[in-house]
Length: 258
Image (cartoon, rainbow, N blue to C red; front, side, top):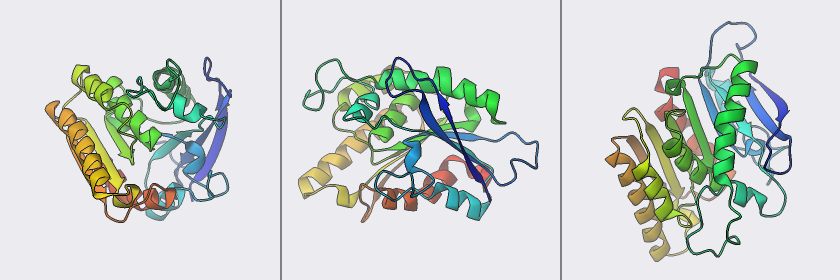
């Protein structure tokens, strides 16, 4: 059985620090000397245990990795739980219609930089994990999915793969596409993206969601990325649905583990 460790790491200038980080270590971590591929994730409290999950249901990532004995380290950053600070910290670009936040309050770019300049180097000193981009991924859902889309474009020299589940695609669509267009992105990049069919309330909203996802997908494909856009039939905006997607995106992003 794999194990979960936690530690705290300073996150200034963001608030609610030092921030708690959850780490899954594979079942053979203590008995081998191998160096492991790594997946960094947002909302670490929701990944491994129902007891720490916001709504009492986690992604079940530990159970899946244990059952299949996959040699992967997963590192999840706890979000800011104060008011709307999670949304602000996980929004990397100005909001286009400015109905979500007051002007100038989004700081997802700071969060993304913290992952690259603070969290990743610290974890590489603490754990036997790869540092080269070929073995490093980023993943998240909802606003964490938006952040993963941003990170795989803006910090492509760091990450080679991303899983972007139920991403919040509407509030920064033009800025995100511009970021993708202006970023230097390797052809070896792999990106999984999806949304659940039950996340939208009408045929009109469903069509709009498909259109947004395909626009983002097209922007990544213009950079010659390997992409996997997906509509999860019957899928909800929930950890219970995202748990069912874990096997799909992990095998797509890390086929060598299988």
